[in-house]
Length: 65
Image (cartoon, rainbow, N blue to C red):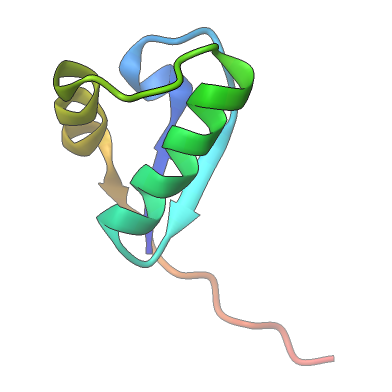
């Protein structure tokens, strides 16, 4: 599992993106940037910054009901 937050790249925002791949994360981040931060397109510089900040996180095991 991978994770990125806006704050990881210096934006004052606590939204967290999680996904299986870097592409999953970037798709979520691009949609959020367009809707919440008035960035209709991710520049190459921001793309690079985001990809560098994506972290691998341990997967939480499912809890049986």
